[in-house]
Length: 250
Ligand SMILES: [Zn+2]
Ligand SMILES: [Zn+2]
Image 1: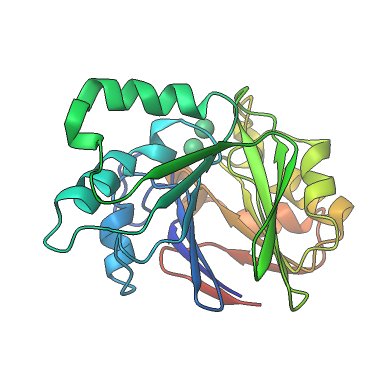
Image 2 (image 1 turned 90 degrees about the vertical axis):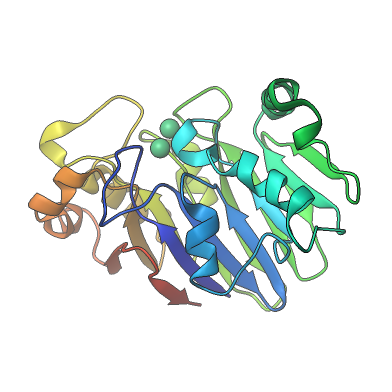
């Protein structure tokens, strides 16, 4: 398993950190978690195009997580090499309605001819694939928010919180996981409802007993504070502060 953080930031335009987007490679499979603004270009910098994605999974439909879905489908339809392979999209409850709404707005520009889009809504579900399984659980952010855990057939595991507040489901989802990529939107002294702080993220990492944590979804103010130290108040395991294009091997 190989994780690439494409964007470690938020909705705030910030040269240092792009919007949410994470690539997970499992053998030949390429999974994309969220596609905030600029995700398609940042994928290219790692040699990945819209043709290469096997599954795209969404944690929720806030724009900083879904903005590049429209360009993804548009490029898949009208690129010099159009996509011919079906595109599975996974999202929380209501994702189909959301997708129908954007398809309604763009009409045929978002209706592929050479491939099909398969949408699967998840809430508390397990999806089995050949070389891995995906476990989804609802998170504490929006009614449609889900976090994901991926387990490979060779015993590796990674979990992705998406946006969330303190959430018992996330502790279960990340139990003993090799790597937990977790949001840590704002420093401890700026706690916002629906989001974590470094020490709350650390508490989840400790309670889940995860082996390694990666703090991501960082507002610019996080770069002015020692968020690692705030997380360390709760978590003693291996800790990384995400950067765009950071790669984590499991
Ligand atoms: Zn967000
Ligand atoms: Zn959000």
